[in-house]
Image (cartoon, rainbow, N blue to C red; front, side, top):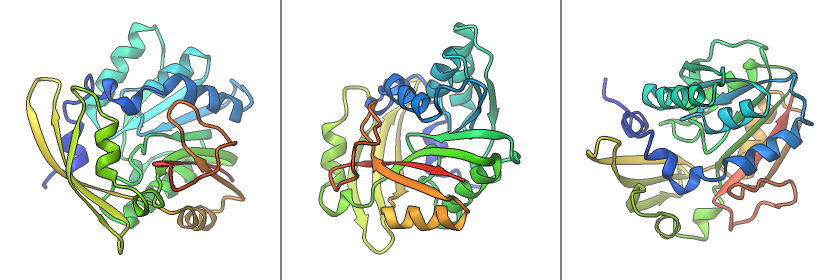
Length: 254
């Protein structure tokens, strides 16, 4: 079976991934998570699409019990190496977020920097990620995640935004096209992997508007849903979501 673009992207892209601009807000984002869970270190946290483990590791350093799941073996290998270097014991597992094996096991789930959601090739697959995470949470569990803001491409060029937020060695984006009927953004990503090999990948990601997220989460039984603008490294309940926000921050409670 042909690999999807996100599988090919993360095959050998762990070191370079850690240097991407959008991965540099970890400490501030974990500060926000701690406040949201009232600094309760007895809570079990599930990190969905944990990648190289940046949030899992930072939270583990602060005394929290974390399980990190990701589809990419290479990303998980890097996560485990980093955790070992800090003498941290984190349960990293290779799992597909559409088929999670957990049931009422976690108090909190985080899914940041998309974490799989919105990368899937169909809306049904994206929904199944939300569904599986929800099943993984205990009653009254909290789900904190970010996703692409569908209001942004209606007013701005995603291509220009990406070009303005990359540095040397980062992935580059071209041939951008936003499909208004599907709210999917199509582009070509060019990267150089950790071995120096250059890759060109045809990608597409699903952008969501707030009303869709509200409806999806309500259909899964969440009672309280709050949506904000997501500022890199500085999540806040004070940031009202606007058309200027590339991502939205979602906080949902069962």
